[in-house]
Amino acid sequence: MNLETLIRAIPKAELHLHIEGTLEPELMFEIARRNGVALRYRSVDALRRAYEFSDLQSFLDIYYEGASVLRQERDFYDMTVAYLRRAKADNVRHTEIFFDPQTHTARGIAFETVFHGINNALRDSGMNTRLILCFLRHLNAESAMKTLEESLPFREGIVAVGLDSSEVGNPPSKFAAVFARAQAEGFRIVAHAGEEGPPSYIREALDLGASRIDHGVRCMEDSDLVDELVRRKIPLTVCPLSNVKLGVFRSMTDHNLRTMLQRGLRVTINSDDPAYFGGYIVDNFLAAASALALTEDDIRRLARNSFEASFVSDATKARFISELNQY
Ligand code: ADE
Ligand code: ZN
Image (cartoon, rainbow, N blue to C red):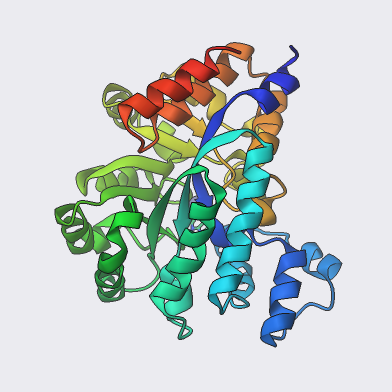
């Protein structure tokens, strides 16, 4: 089996995926039309041409604008169904999906409209899935706490809380009280850290109880931190195409994913916002494998890491890994 066939075929988990980042331009236009929302772009092609980003903020500005077409439960449902179909085609067996309620509640959309739309699609898919509620770190801690409280009636459907949006200047410590409350309520903690922000943000996230770090690529600037991440087997959900599109690395050949693997870090490959960054999970594997000369062993390791890093039970992990071992 050649490497590309192996990458496509092996069972894998996706652990870093923003559902609002899966909204493809075609579906965005369709939803905008049925909701009577005007978009700044005249066509799908014009919108796609605008997807040239210089950094995280330049992406976020257009990403929040795209999300503004989502108004009805059906919109969230259709978006989620489209992602799950795409993930299944890539042999994703399990996916842990971020959603950003504040992006919607700030526009007057009820929390339960967002939650039910996404969650009903997960339920109808029959796939193994979990939901992770992300707080927008450019907003204040009071807004995050209010969102956490709004989520409590739905807590059975939400495995963890996370932190996303504009990283630099918004360290995890800004949300210490929110994460303490979330942990007390039984949520697991994850956080975007060390994407554009410094390694100290990764330390802060760990101090606040994060059991997984999203991106985390800048950990390599602090060898004591790397030692700790290796010793504690803290998973890092790396998103190669995203990192290149947002200028975290100049090109895929400059990406540090292979060095991270060689250093013994529990790295996984994910697609982040596939509709904006030019590819789903298999595209991310293929781009990284080709630019970084990843081996078959590396690919198997990455897929195994994805199950080990997931929030499923040990028995389910063992079942997925035994399926993986048949390749
Ligand atoms: N929201 C969606 N994608 C993100 C990313 N890569 N970093 C921070 N916030 C995000
Ligand atoms: Zn992300």
